[in-house]
Image (cartoon, rainbow, N blue to C red; front, side, top):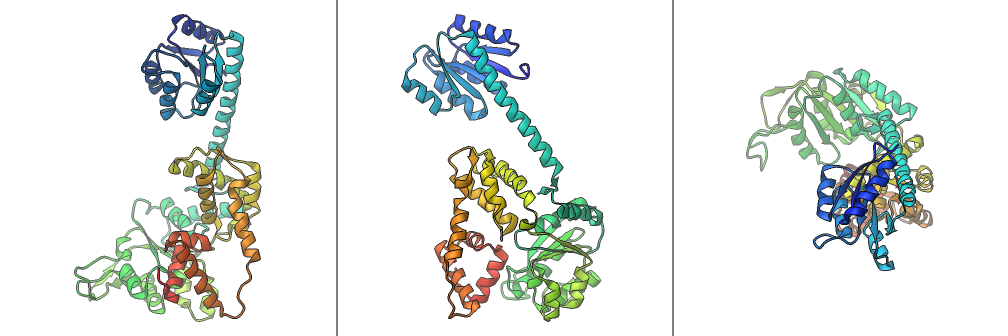
Length: 452
């Protein structure tokens, strides 16, 4: 265990520096030395040491604590032991507060140094083994950045690989936040169109007129403001993949236009007279039950059959709870870096809280919960208290008495309006608070004429 762990001894006293290095080498460690804080920082830049033994009092310019702070800027995982002949409570507190792992007083006992080194490196070895295990699990349960060990999800991964290079249309169904676009991207990436464009369009976020222009493009002068011709998303996806998110919200007119694209692979730009031909693979997604929409006359049956050549139904997170610990640790590793927070783990108690939650917003809601907890966390591991807001939210829902004198749509309108107002018009935050995706929120805002 000793040889992989290099150690740096930093002391301006030659005898002390040489003696400590000799003791450590006798135990089999690879030891370098530095005679000043600045030399220690330079050596730390060139080499990643497992432990730094740093003298507190050194010549003017950079003392031990200053050297420790500089080293930890680019070696945050380093274990630093401050050593001094001037032991006081204040210096001990200052050293530990700035990040020192241990504090020793001169004259040092060789046996004490040896035992301390063994203890620190034993912890480091366990951390290294834990990291390797996590990486192994991540690779084992990672498919195109989708994390799961659920049997149904494994079947989906296999199906994605089977159909990736086909031209057939794919319909992905699942609740909001289950990762429909990620599955669509996986289909694209695994197939022979991987190096071609992947173009995504949210069919719920735009009015019929805007969505028509967005999909098919327009010619110059087609409408007020069309000062030049513009290609639509279908044309931009030529030779690649077009992803139509929330296809169930498309108007009857656009349903007919999309059916023609699927059947003939050609269309007209808005205001155009010349047909545009494309080679595009279409993947559609929806949280709606399209079969029910067809029965109710809200969705064309011929378009549904054209879309539903290959059907992928993503199970909600509450039906694959075994994925929650994997997803939580994945989010912690990624988000803690993005947010600049030193959060590295999650307690078993917190995992129990998360596994027992119903997750109406699915994986997206889980990610948002982990992100919020990382921001407010005071320790290096998330615990139950960091997810207390979920319990409060659930309790508030249980205690809320809904009005019985209003139509359901009016209740929905008031809730959306109040949430938007309370969050300063922030659409993303409002969608997260309501447990719906942004496209659905845009649709409701438009439907009820709510001002942002």
